[in-house]
Amino acid sequence: MRIRPFSLTLASPLRTAREELTEREGFLVGVGFDGGEDGPVPGVGEATPLPGWTESFSACEAALREAGSDTASAGRVAAPEDLAVIDARETPAARHGLALALGDAAAREADRSLADHLADRADAPNPADSVPVNATIGDGTPESTAAAAARAVEDGYRCLKVKAGARPLADDLDRLRAVREAVGSAIDLRVDANGAWDRATARRALDRLKPLDIAYVEQPLPAADLGGTAGLRAESEVPIALDESLAAHSVADVLAAGAADALVIKPMALGGPDRALDAALRAREAGVDPVITTTIDAVVARTAAVHVAGAVPEVLPCGLATGDLLAADLAPDPRPVADGRIAVPDGPGIADGAFDELV
Image (cartoon, rainbow, N blue to C red; front, side, top):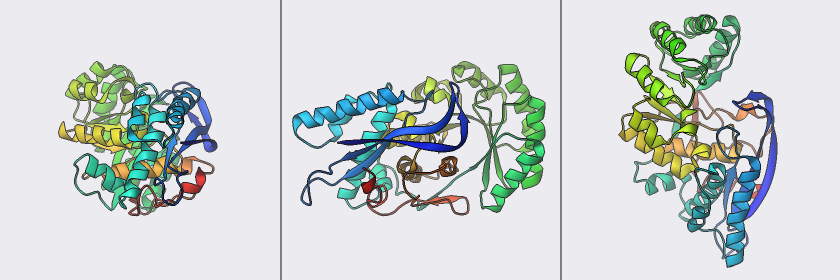
């Protein structure tokens, strides 16, 4: 195993539940690079922890180096059994990095894309050629929010996610009405409250949002309040999606609670593209729509998330258009957004070896 740390500056600061982030720090993980022409096929992964969602940077590094030391002491390259060394609940970003590197290598050895490899492993249908993505519209005045939404539609996006919850509810409702008026009824409109509302405010919000034909409200209540969210969903005609709740509860518990119409699934936070696809298919079987998104990852993990989304049958617009949140990236994006969609790379592995030089 090769483990290379990196740090990328964000285009603008990001406020999380714990702190304000100005950079994304993580590790590139390489496997099978030392075997020569006749040796193992190389694979590249990325482990980029996010406070509040995954382990810390130091815990991620420790887990990766422990897995790497095990392979080194055994005198062999990394193998799928090495994933057992990493606890997916305690250090999901570390597991993601190694699982992705191993998946990239396995897919390249089979001369097929990572999406094909994942779909075959999960007994899912053939992956899609491209996936729809949403544009994210940040906080602002009604006028600036509506203008940003209109620009996104001009760029080809057919689904918009508008951030809410940082202002009084009345102000957010004014913003959302302005967006709906600006983009018309044909555009899917999502609202992301990031867990900012209490139960009473959330009830009022859902009642007043109903006339705006909202596709869903994401995380209306704090992540821990799964019971309250289930009750809210039972009372409301506006669909509810859960995101942060998946950092506080297992996918199985969220589905059992009947608390969501959609789940926002982050491969980095769930411990790997394999686990993310399993969760997405499990949600679909339960009648809940999966939406694949990133934790503001670098290009390796972001491209891998596109493969995961491509392997989900009839996936809804996903939160994968996040590359512009970084001031600079590790490498050029092999599949940038075009007309509100991202093409799933069809070469071997993640991107046909395009990221090998990074590690």
